[in-house]
Image (cartoon, rainbow, N blue to C red; front, top):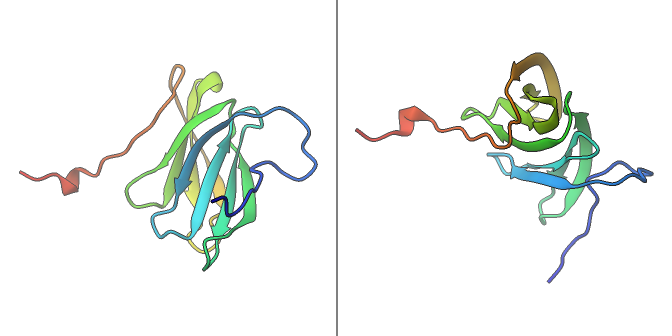
Length: 124
């Protein structure tokens, strides 16, 4: 049963779009949704009933955000900007969910997915 329909694009945006990654923050308070043609990541707060409320959006500082992921501490989000040939780094505000660009890029040809694994969790 459908509970809610909500756009990941800003009000009034009339252009085309393809969605990409959808992530839930480790603490379960925020949802992050990628917009490939809009080159943005939308942030939604998750209410007590599970309802989403638009919180903010951040430009990915690149083109065609195909995949993104939080590093193991949850403090930073890395966005694979596939057509820009880079991975951009954002600081995540744990109170608001807001993403803030750190100014750091890593050049990578055609990045399409990123995954982190905490080696400290590895069993001997």
